[in-house]
Length: 486
View 1 (tube, rainbow, N blue to C red):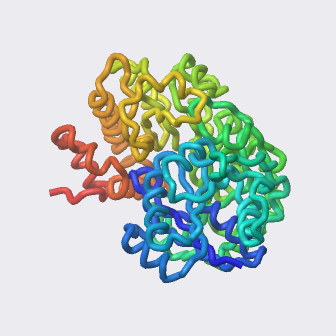
View 2: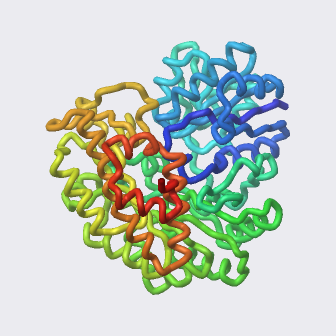
């Protein structure tokens, strides 16, 4: 049996970590299945601990692993590669493995460009990874292990695709391997946060997205009983008080979702939930939104992405522009915090179209908005339309907050500055609204969220660089306790 370390690479761009710190959920599941197979496993979250490579190597070498595995989306691929390169340099005998979205689709590039990476685990790893280790230990034919890629005598070999795991309730997550003190939601100082999966997959076909391709437009769900029992276990065993539901589409099956809500209401665990779902589902569930709030759902992200129907259709969003505003209104009426994003920076973008998006974002009036740059992920359906407009091949910048596409009628800097102005104008406009909120919960939530954004996000050094802060804005920031008003 092997000693296996699962390492989250130290990658930061001021997006994911702006609201809090949460575990790598994939590692929790994979660790559980590795332990079932008899391996000794350690989870090491270098990202949440803010450990740099020298400290990471001290931690890794002290464990004396036989196998080091990491994961990467496109922007974190360089950091993951640096990690595995250092591991291999320190001990060439250590087996290095990588999984995740980027490696799944770009395994040929990964194995060609990074000779220190031994194996790629494609798509779900809970069954594949233990099978790979067993084959290595038994010196069996790796070609019989479905769902991997590796270098063979005749070049790079990708084995047959592994069918998706259908019984998600059969998995045994290794929650006990986490350092729970690392995980918190900045909006509630002192909170302890868990990330939870109630389903896997997405049956839609947004052209800019990786998830629908990763899951092959499929969707599978855990039973409501399994989901709620796990939540109760985490609350009682690890004192979790905030949950982030990581599913791409947790509400896809209304009957199942309502059973989860009803069970949460019945158990009354006193915890809070943040979820992501689709505009269409919010409209569908208007009659049960009170159950969302009673169950503890305090924050809902819906992906609007664009304010024009033409762009929505180009992105294959499958929603109507008018429905986006309606969905946000329904969320607000239920006393729930709303969040959404708008994608900017397509080749056709102009200063006028950016301004139009900002104007409509203000009209839609979500509680929180993100103005994100279109990222040319090499496996996305939209990639062929973007390839000729890419201005950098540094994958670490493919993070939604740095422009890597040059529009035909704007420079890259003009695009970047226009998006920063969107953030500045949107949030400066929200301050007066927040100062006057009568709902004490939403007022406190808004203030703490804005403080988290100002302290931890990529906006920290950009928004106020556009010019002197208006006196009224400075006064409001001081009133809200976000700055010292001197």
